[in-house]
Length: 488
Picture 1 (cartoon, rainbow, N blue to C red):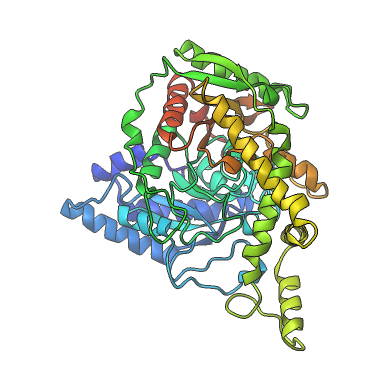
Picture 2 (tube, rainbow, N blue to C red):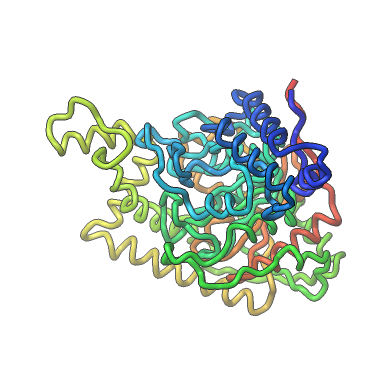
């Protein structure tokens, strides 16, 4: 089997030295993706011809001395809800069968401008609705550390592809933890920046006030490089933040002295947390203390409401956003329908999976007359309280540290019949989306041979601070350097 690809820095070094070409690197990535296809199910589609052509153009630029960026010629992957001109986009759903995008997302445009080579579209929960990638029409992605376990969701394919060394970097979307939780399960770094940092133009909408694009890699330094390349104001996205993009990588000096880390007491005392996970997180906090950080306890009084609040707001927005999939303009259309109404009913019944239907029904209910004030409006009011909790906490600390997930990767099939238990997988991550905060998950240990993630949350637009904390921790530990066992 093709050897795992190294880090972005390692690949860039051999590219610049002429020891390997981008075409060869892309070929290795494609070969490894195909070899691990059934074992991991990380990809929904590979760009074999297109990626090789892009790589050849990168090699030509390098030969001319016209390299565009540190990402030029580097193979990357994108989640299958980010459109790319001339390529299919399915969101892992039957309802988008046959759809080929006529334009590219801002994310893809920025990757192409940087010279990065998109090798394929990664697996995901249908329309990003899930925490295990089990709601994909193509079946679940498998965790590289144990294929019987979930890779997380909804960006499980992206996390698995990086953890398995298919690509050194990948992009996902995070609506309630869908980057950070898979990163924790698969033992890689995953970051959701501040809402508005990365344009959502061309990201297929799930819940528009919560969706955010972010990155996966093996280190915080690589995530900084990736986010610098794709962040920035985009006039095509009305929610895009008109803020300059700092050079986050240059701020990674390995020094956290003077920073105060807050430990939310509500998270540490959560009933559902695995004691082994909590022990790993406490060890990580102690390591950051030894690096010079101070630690204090803080309170998030409304934390217990976050999951309920999230699943009211997210489903309401999903109900609205997914109304466009009606069989008229694009995607699947039911055959032999008897009139327009029957076509709508059949198309949506055949095209959407069970979890998407569940969320559309719940969202439609909470927006309906007589229930809007009792549910949706109330959820928005509680969302404001949650945001104020964070604002208060950040008056006494520079960042919050928590477990990313209350447990390590669970067995595939163990939660599919218990939606509430599945939803609680995101108990520590959804609050950041409700408040629009940046958050990063970094590997901090193992339990029963499976990775554990440390989550660091910060005030809006303070990605650099979080990356500095994560990078400092990685300089002092070796968890991120451990790789899953190679398949026999």
